[in-house]
Amino acid sequence: MESLILVDIQNDFLPGGALPVPRGDEVIPVANALMRKFGLVVATADWHPVGHVSFASSHAGRKPGDVVMAGGVEQVLWPDHCVQGTEGAEFAPGLDASRIDRIVYKGTDPEIDSYSGFYDNGHRRSTELHQYLLSRKVDAIYVMGLATDYCVKYTALDGIALGYTVYLVTDGCRGVDVNPGDVDRAIQEMAESGVRIVTSADLLG
Ligand code: VGL
Ligand code: ZN
Image 1: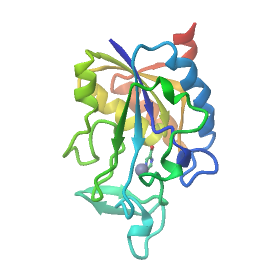
Image 2 (image 1 turned 120 degrees about the vertical axis):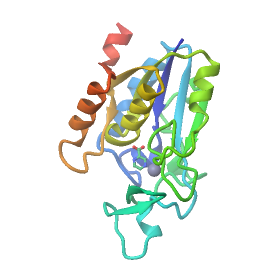
Image 3 (image 1 turned 135 degrees about the vertical axis):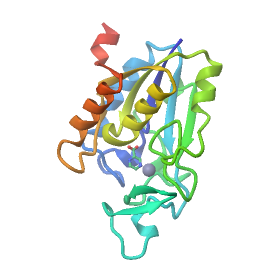
């Protein structure tokens, strides 16, 4: 069984949002087209409590982009984003959410961040994503969404480590590129780890 995994296609990651991914809105039509081709669609949602450890505002004297230790791992600090229950945390309005079979919430632990849809950044606790995919007999996942160099990358790499066949749908992703080249390096790293790089045209054609 194959599953489409939509990573964090939420208002705060779109232009005008709290943590805007440049051209992040361009992934929405790709997601809508691909959802029609898959029998199973899972969407992850970044879902932080107020005062989350990944927010620069939670650390006195720190600003977005600074790096601190949190939960035993390095944590890049971000503007407040995807706070549980806020409009910024909702899926993009143009996303055909009626086709989503399961939503997996992540980043809910106040003390540690979670880029991957599978585990927190310290690999201490898992979300229910792996269990859910196992229960649906999924062996191949097609990953797309936001942001290429963070949540998409770590979801794809954990998928490989867990034994899935993992495809990255490149035109369905946009990245933050905090340091120019981060997106290209992320794709390179995924490819070297065994992620198969495809475009939506390969799947829709
Ligand atoms: C993400 C930074 C902070 C992402 C989430 O979805 O890639 N990036 N939280
Ligand atoms: Zn986040």
